Length: 185
Image 1 (cartoon, rainbow, N blue to C red):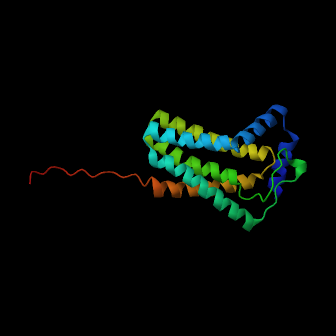
Image 2 (image 1 turned 30 degrees about the vertical axis):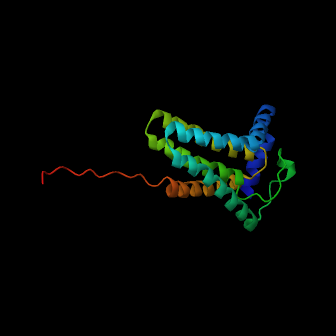
Image 3 (image 1 turned 180 degrees about the vertical axis):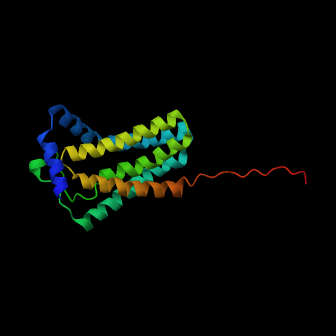
């Protein structure tokens, strides 16, 4: 925990009012029922606009699985959260892996993969925005002292693995159709 403590100490020593307000807003909005409903609506819109129903389904399925697995892992690992002296946000329960990190990355992976699979500028922009938002949420959790850096990194790794697995099961691999050449026979 030496690196984690040093990172959080440096962050605590250099927090600014505007950045703390922004991080608090991201945390409050991101963990609200409204945000979860908005995410569900965005999944439906994503599926409809891009005709990508399987990735749109894979995102919430992966998110729910990631939360469940992360919560079970927290109980097994039993790592304490950062001390209140370094925290701007009061959180309860164990810290590792970050459930929010696992959930956001698990939901993001199917959308990012589908965006990249489109092979268009729109798909690449969508993938970049979703990836940046996922990183932003994790950074806010560390900045506010709700999690140690390694909690978020572990959450992202767990969520990414779950997102990839669910995407593979629901959306399937890229399949190329074989075209038989006409041989005249």
